[in-house]
Image (cartoon, rainbow, N blue to C red; front, side, top):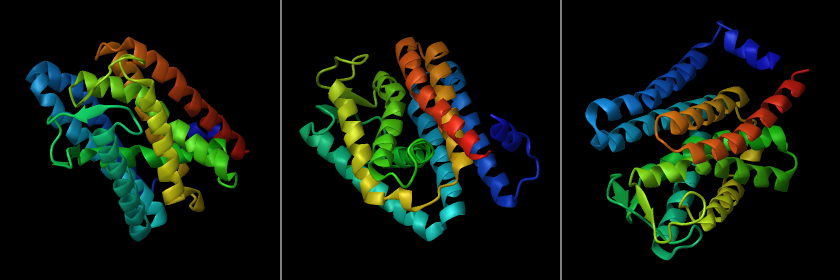
Length: 261
């Protein structure tokens, strides 16, 4: 854990680092404000507040990645992720493959093909962190272990996400049974999507900025675990998601610490 402590306590940050950590801090504040806004403004504020928090996280991750890879390469990466995930979500909500039969409600706007445009942004805001976890655990040179771990790392997030989004009425399942009323086919679909998008983007070609993206993964783990357990009344998903995503996080931190010695 020494390297993590050193990075967190290092006050000599470049301008780029100040901006990226400033955006991450702004995103944390937006996430913390969610339950407060619900208490003060009512349930109707949730879609707007979630949209705002998502866009800030998306902006933070985009900035972090482009600071390392450049604007052109990051924009290409975003385009590939957005096109692939929108297409898979459109296929999924239209046919039931690969996630199972579900349908987006009209809560999240705007939509294209009845798929909220925020959904591809949500995929992008977490995929680079999942690729970083895979980079640390499996290594960029081990192709299929890297691809598989990328899919596992992004799917672990959905152990939190789907129960909460369904509870907020963002989408509905035709057969609400399985994992806290989420069909198990959904997680097979997430794994498949993680594999497909990773194969399409081929992020193992790049040395992603490890520390800020792993920090994003860790913050998501912390906020989802404690938020769903103590503020949103979803103790089951909080425990399962906390253990699975937390295990990947710890594994990654151990690998990062060993690499630093």
